[in-house]
Length: 227
Image (cartoon, rainbow, N blue to C red):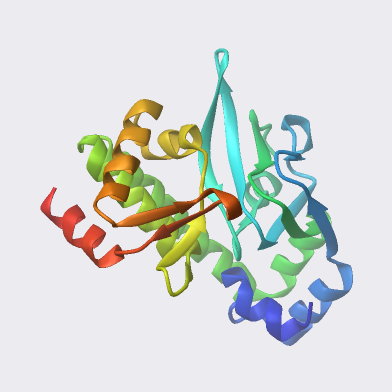
């Protein structure tokens, strides 16, 4: 990828120096993963930072005998940076929800870039604060009814990773259990509520291309305000 494309695609590198972007291009490794493959296992965190060029990734953890999805990421986002910064073990895995293309940079080189570029270091702090706000917001959602939580989760995914199309805003047709984990509701409620939204014409699911279209996102915004 060219330096200009990296600066435009990844929010972390907004304001980074040309030297930082050129170094990233020279050292980053391109990696492709097929759907359902493990991108990072529990023992591999802290070795590199990964940047999503295209595709969808979930971060999951094991609670008892059940796997729980903690986060869903897509184009423009990165993961693994926290493990590089605090060097603590992780009881999580990163799994490809679709075919994924990533750029990776080793932990040592990533830390060197942060130390050499004050703008990148500041931007890293900004994004960490933003993630903390997102976590706090998700925590606040738990006291709301399931319908509200699912709609707000769909809106969040659309705002952060959605692609505008003639049908509406397109996101991945995320497996119901993963979507339920993210919204903090059960899988049965998720399936029932998605069917209701489809019946009302506010979303459309295309199994052939694994896509979910928010066909009336304005109505979803309006409904979220009412609940």
